[in-house]
Image 1 (cartoon, one colour):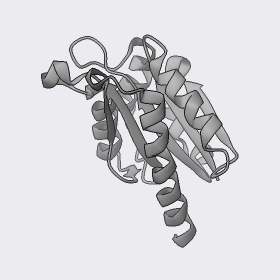
Image 2: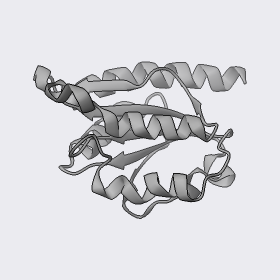
Image 3: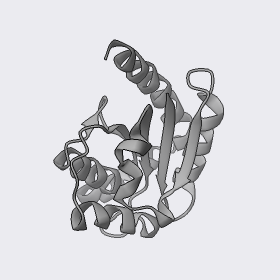
Length: 159
């Protein structure tokens, strides 16, 4: 089993979160890959890529509740060339700022909605980090991810 963390970011915060997870969670799952969404399309979720894999979407929110620029091609390809993704198991870390309540964590929420529409299987709830609290997203998201990974691995062992 491996974890593929797909990172959507404008200011590298989501990338820092992914790196913290990679460093902290190798005792739970030694094979953790980080991939920036820059050159990805829906093919990243193919049956071959998803075999023995969990996906973690780790993305910020940009502008008026949009996905980051580097995530746009992947996000749009999921609508332009939709495929059934029932074989995909995933989680979402959404970064945002509750000061912008109307669009809080929409980058991650939009990915979650699109993946659900394509039949992917979300494990657990979407984790939303609020930058306005002053907490470190790397610490908070890593703690969440440790529990999420534990649950996901138990779920995979039963299946």
